[in-house]
Every structure is written in structure tokens, then in C-alpha cells.
Amino acid sequence: MAKYIFVTGGVTSSLGKGIIAASLAKLLQARGLRVTIQKFDPYINVDPGTLNPYEHGECYVTDDGAETDLDLGHYERFLSIPTSQANNVTTGRIYQTVINKEREGAYLGKTVQVIPHITDEIKKRMLELGKTGNYDIVITEIGGTVGDIESLPYIEAVRQLQWELADDDLLVVHLTLIPYLKAAKELKTKPTQHSVKMLSESGVFPDILVCRTEEPINEEIKRKIALFCNVKPEAVIEAVDASTIYEVPLIMMNEQLDRIVLKKLNMPDNHEPELGKWKEFLNKLKYPKAKVNIGLIGKYVELQDAYKSILEAFVHAGAMNECKVQVQYIHSEFITPENVAEKLSSLDGLLVAPGFGHRGIEGKITAVKYARESGLPFFGICLGMQMAVIEFARNVLGLKNAHSREMDPDATEAVIDMMEEQKKVTKMGGTMRLGAYPCDIKEGTLAHKIYGAVQISERHRHRYEFNDQYLELFEKKGMIASGKNPQTGLVEIMEIAGHPFFIGVQYHPELKSTVENPHPLFVHFVAASKIFNENKSAQKAPVLQSELG
Image (cartoon, rainbow, N blue to C red; front, side, top):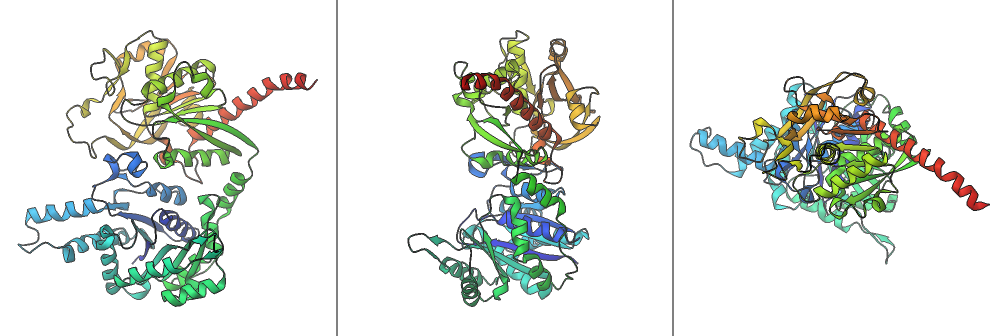
């Protein structure tokens, strides 16, 4: 039977429960254990698929088509194993299931209540992955903050499981905050004490405290926290701020979090975690030999979490190229033909990001035109690919009214149109083309060089596609479909031959990039940007030398 670890959070949100959970999972996995992580979110949305990125950051998509919380991206990036629908559960999904059962008469006329019906459904989901026999340890992150009304049913479910399971089959890790008051030059433990007290009043007693802090915690403070929070001093773990999230597993290993967990779960502690590849990645990340500026053009640039997977894919690809990727956020609404050269001239590469809706579209098209004409390495993802298609149609094919049916329902030259199976869809949630689909790649193309394969699988999240009626015209003029879905013929990859690097993909490659397996599209894009930067610097060198006399 699997063992269960629950990660809760207190004092404030955004402390990094997902990173702590993923770091602990990485350490246990590096010891040879089979580990998975799941996230329980307290909001009433069935999934984050209909949430605005400003509300909740990016929507992460799994191979089986689940629209999930962005923390599942961290889980996959750390563990290099895919997650699924079962790894993300929301209050909305729990209530939906219980209400459907009630309508079917499954409760035999009983009054349906939070306890036991809602909590029973939560417990069933919490134990589900552990019962498959595929895992030694299941880590469950409870979203929200202890004390939130929304989180109470989840905390109650954990309380019941503490009572139902054996003592060494379950433990609770509570993440909290030790604020540093600069005026007093003092770390304050009171918020942590109150947070643990609130959790204990719900009947859940933490086994381990992980304390987020800006300043190191000394042994005296650890003993004080342990005394007032009823844990052993060695179970008070310091989580000092790190320069990158990928340092956190090593910080947790130095604090012996994995050892304490194994001891409390009565599991063997046979050897140190094997983290050779991880340390090699970190070394390349910390000590790059080059630097590139890549522009990320989108309409949610105020919130970095809206493009979380893209940013992390750049971290992975940068380390692979021993190159620091400096991402420059550019709001597409503020790009015009008059200022595009000024805004983009300092870049070594341009990525046009995914998105929905018409806002900022013309700015994206203008930016793509600049990249195509100037030889600037270009990478378009989903909507970014569609913008490249529209730009090419307008400015190379002469289709001045070229547009996407999404932005202009009455478009006379819809080079991007709604997918046939989407035309009858009326509900928004969970109805897009979602999950992993195969793609056949044409040999001899840039895509073939990048992947080194003729058959791949990538994850999707879209309703609109390239209009096949225009494909022959596009390919005659030099923009070719280098990747297609073998079953439907859907165009997956468009590229321009002869350009230093110009490729757009309908899918979301950023969702499959991990620390140990950086996505090849990002790796090659960063490499092309690096070459562009070197060539630009070489062209500038004679001028600089003459200026020096």
C-alpha cells in the first residue's frame, strides 16, 4: 500500500507549496521510490479552463486532455513523469460528482451533507492514485491557506484519514512563513504559531514544518517553533529564499527533509538521493557562457504566471545551451508599424505567445512581419503560429483581408478557421481540442532537424486551425506545412525555408519541457538566437574598433 504525504499552507498564499511538494517528490524519486503528486484546489470551477490568465495564471494541459492548475507543470518539470486528470481535483468537480450521484439516487434517500458525503468523495480521490499499485508515495498539495472557508472540507478529510490510516502511512507537512521585520531586525515566529494552532483546531496536527524565510533561522528559533507548535526540533525545516526554484530540492536535502519523511513513514533510508543530472543542470544555469535577449510578445505580460511553462522551458533550453535567456516582455497592444523596429531591434529572438480573443492581434502580426523581414529568429506557439500565417497571407500572398475566424467571424479570407468538430460546440469548459495528438513530420525540414524524428506527439488546446484550402498557395510562396496530424490532416507546424529560424506550431511544446529533457524546439530556438546575437556582435565590432581609433 502506498504512503500518503499532505502539504498544507498557512499565513499567506503563494508561499510555494507546489515547489516544496515537487522538491520533496524529487528527493524521494532520486532515492529510487515511485512518487506522484496531486493538487486539490478549493475553487468551485470544475477546472481552470475557463479562468482568465490574470485570475489564475496559465492553464496547464495533460496528455489525457485535462485542463489543470499550473502547479502540475512544476510536478512534471521536476519529476519528468506525466500527470493526468486524476492529479488535479477541484471543489467544483467534487460537488459535481456528489450532486450527480444524488440525482441518480445513489444515496438511497439520505440527506446529502458535507460530512460524510463531500468528505468521503474527497478521501476517495486522495487515495485513488495510491490504490493503483503504481506508487510508493502519493504527495497531495492542498490549495489555499489554512483558515480559508473553502479549504475546510479538505482539511477535515485529512483529519479523517489521520484517524483511519496507520500512523506510519500518513504525514502532514505544513508550509508557513517566518517574516523578517527590518525595523526590529528580528524574525517573528508568531504567524507560524497561529497558523499551526488554526490547523490543530481543525484536528490536523502537522508532523513537519517547512518555514519560508528571507533570513536564516538559528537553532534557538527552531527550538521555539518546535516547542509552541508541538513538533520535534529536527522537524522544523528552514526554506530560505533561493535564486531559482530548481535549487529548492538541494536546499531541502541539506535540511534532511527527505530523511525525516522516510523516518516518520517507517521506510528504509538506504542511500543518498542521486542528483547528478540535476546538479549538472544547476551548474550550467548558474554559470552561463553567453546571453541572449528574447522578446515574449503577448497580452498577459503583466502576470508572469500566465506564461509559466514558456518561461521555464526557456530556463531549461538556456541551460542546455549554456546561455542565459533574458526574456523581455512586450505587450502586443502597444506595437505599431511605426515603433516595431525600435521595440524589437535589441532582440536576438522573438516568441509570439498563445492567447485568445482579438485584443493585441494587430501588434502580434506587425511583430511577426518584422521578424520575417529582418531575419530575426521567430517561434510562434498556437495563436503565435496563426498570427504568422495571417501575416504571410497578407504581406506575401497579397490576401489583404486575411484573418482568423476567431477575430473576424465574417472574414472573407479566413486562413485560420474554426475546426469542423468545434462548430457545434456551445459550452466553453473542457470542449476545446485538448491533450496529446500525434504529428507526422516531413523529412528534410527544420522541424525534422529539430526533432530528429518523423513521428511525434504533442499537447493541444485550441478551437481554430489552419485553413487547408490555402495550403497550396502558401507552399508555392515558401511557407510550408512541415507537420500534420496523420488522422485528420490538421496542419501542426508551419515554417519558412531560407529564414535563419522561422517556425510556428499549433500545439504547446512548453508543456513537455522538463529539467532533464528540455524541449528541442526551445533548445534550437535559443541556439538560433545565440547565433543571431554572435553575428550581430561581429557586425558591430569593426564599428566599435574604429570609434576607439
